[in-house]
Image (cartoon, rainbow, N blue to C red; front, side, top):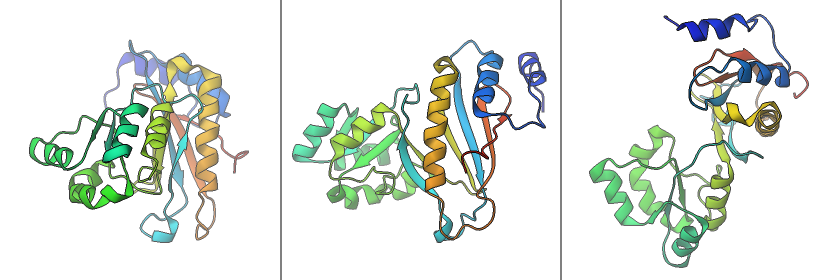
Length: 230
């Protein structure tokens, strides 16, 4: 795989055989980020579970203390007073069947998170095949199916992120921007890792956190030592 000169220069500053302390890792990320835009910093956590088994699923949501640094567009399915409350809370789009038809007919996906009141799930369920594969289907576990849609919108806007396993048992999550600096990235990292560790399934055997790598959008990965957290 061809890598540009900037990437290669950054990679030279990182020892791939070392698991760095979290703060050291974020210092390296901030130092080696060379793109002309404010790169997103992501965390990739491989867990010692098998996501094919229902009792070993790891999924939830957590509000990062410093947010993610990106503007999140929220679509809310609600009616009446709840719809009004969602608008007041800052939802970008609010609707019912009109939004379902817009997504179905226009292939419209100009939103990042979907929130729904429980009474609207019958309507939202029609979009399962469209929202599901994109990871956009609201769920009670992630706090996106809730009677208090206004609170859910506020939390998402404040930096609430959802974490879940992919098919290879890895969780991928943004934890901020390079411009946040080491301390804020470290705070967000500790909050997310704390939530993932707390969500350990009872059925999980052996080593729970297998590996943890952080990387900026265009930069090389840095291994993080999580021993003190587990």
